[in-house]
Image (cartoon, rainbow, N blue to C red; front, side):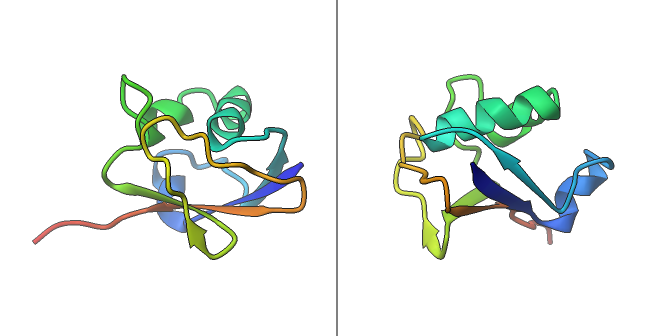
Length: 91
């Protein structure tokens, strides 16, 4: 199972979110679905109604930014670390 890590900013919306969890999945889409099983509603915060990654969210597999932000089919291996980051905006 891949190790999923989050920025602290996501805890504002999900206060019980662990710093790191392990979830099954062979693609980012599957990982997000498994994550949503543990934290209901978090998938909707990360992707839009069409399943595309939201503009304010970045996901890395290791040190590489995912390429497929539309269907989230980037491959995830069992030993991978996946980082989910919320961008900060404002002015």
